Length: 458
Ligand code: S3P
Image (cartoon, rainbow, N blue to C red):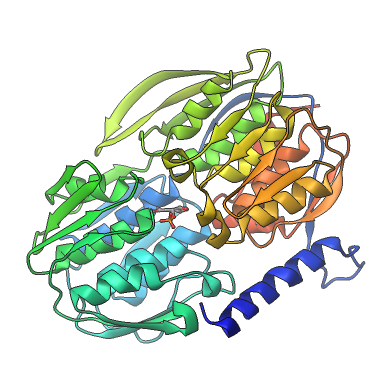
């Protein structure tokens, strides 16, 4: 990242932090704040909108397949709508009504878009689509919102350039990304950063390339792309942390129901872990082992978790999970590969930490600093505003247990997971939490606040 870019991104972050400290002015132009009131218990059952990671991948591969891909329970989040919008701009006919999506596949060749491709807030859209655009016979430009425009793209550009595409970003390889597609050649690539988005971009590019593309990841990341490619009829091999795909394989459309999003479920699972009388059942939720580490961590902390049934659909495990409190919730130390496996759940684990006996320590999670916001700084700021002591390091946090929280007014930092994690932290506090710009939850989970409200007892 260049000095100028870094300063600009730091400036936006500092602005948001400043905004969080200012009293809310009473005017129509004010950013709306959502109030979360403390609760006495959480109980009931819920079913979640489709998993965001899987929804993106089924839509992208549906576009490259032959035939019509029919999806149910497609993610209701704005991120996946960004993927559909880009695919439409690339010539795919798409029908989208509620959770039902029909993608008319075009095969490997997409259409020259009339303008820039708007990825909104979605890093997954930009990085995974970059892999597909690298293999097209036209040039395209991927743009994003203020947050996405600060996120690193070099990690995906470097290997795609090695495969033959020409890619440039703005200074520091931030978006907009300009991609001149080309006939690609397969490569063998060792990823320096654990990123399922980058792995997926390379596998999708590999499908369009000549020869074999092999990707080795430093630690195992979510494997939805490998499973989805197989579901659409391609062969993908895996050995240890290495997977590979041969170019030129044809994809066939699928019909699928997207499993409920486990990263969204995590907010409710952690909320249930706060209350001694809680009892929550989550139906139809994704239980893919590369995504379900939150269940292991909570179990390790003493939360009683039962998997009531389990099925497999297109290689993905789906089931019903019941969560109950077990009298005491101890703490956890999360590090190494576990931090990568829990990358989207770490903010809500931080929110749970003050309610545990021994606190939560997170290491090796530097990637949190380059998500939709700097999630380490954002969670530290919000928990401190509620009265907690938080130790911050470059790659993680330590939050002691048994810290009483009080009401406050905090910022979402324009980050859906920070808004939802802060809401969870508020549930056992002594006063109300006002979260500014909490509507950002729509990025992954419109309806989050009303669903949460429906499960709470006061
Ligand atoms: C995702 C991968 C992760 C995750 C993101 C979704 C995916 O990002 O944080 O929310 O669907 O592949 P990275 O690939 O940057 O780790």
